[in-house]
Image 1 (tube, rainbow over the protein chains, first blue to last red):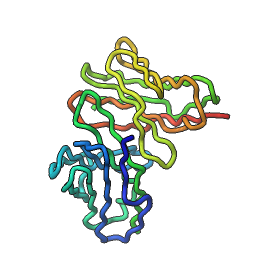
Image 2: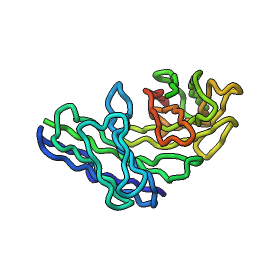
Image 3: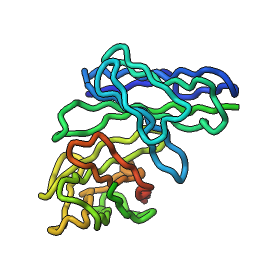
Image 4: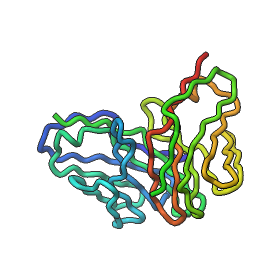
Length: 114
Length: 110
């Protein structure tokens, strides 16, 4: 079974702190994604990576950066956390083959910024 | 991005079939129809996808209208574990993007 793990299920940080959210997948997938999920807004794509050291902005990249130094690991960085970044953060991965395409999601990290 | 319309919520009895509808009248010829579900306190989980023909897998069946402007996810025998939010999503061929809408919350009564 594909497994996508996220470093924390719950995280509480203070405004202005630098926050790292880590995601690891064990299926050798090329693509990895970071979403945030908010009530009434659904899941929104923050960043996407299609290979090591490669990244593309999603729909809401402002206030976030990412790092992909190894194929299995994709990190989301909040340079200076703000209260409007309180949310559920979901990581996903998928193989590169577009025609048989499904994304595998991790369990999520609920981040609270106070 | 093409949009989908789903009912906000549906209810079903345990062990009965469930038909979850989705309208996507602006679908284009290269859009795949994907279904995901999200159980409480978990990340979304892939259910099924199709392009033109009906599809079956171990979790569900996907019935696609001939004009492709609507589709139906069929759970053949609902269980309590199927209570979740079900998302119908259109994905363009060659696109990595999945655009999640608000989904249908399925309640399963024992």
